[in-house]
Length: 128
Image 1 (spheres, rainbow, N blue to C red):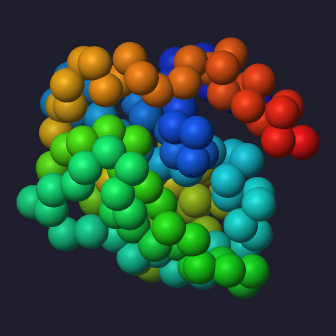
Image 2: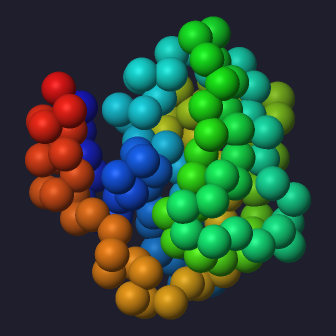
Image 3: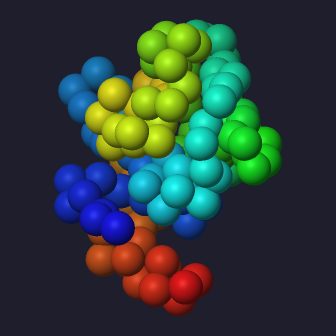
């Protein structure tokens, strides 16, 4: 599984992409493949605030219901509305069209606590 070099990662298998107006959060390729075919995504409302590590979304697959955790503290400023009708985008394009939410820019120190691509790859190897 490819681990994009332009992202940061949480140990709980969420990815973070830093953009000018906030950070985009999704689940990694490893996470979506472990979940199986995703049939529903429950996303938080815009304006909701979360602490790092707090459950902020729920993804339901044919295998299980999985919590998605906030990789950093922040306020939801956008959600991926396309997932309401097409939750399978998480399976088919987890690093693109299958993103979940966008959070307001967090403290830089929290971003620095996330795993680098190399650290995340090492975690995946250790879990295998």
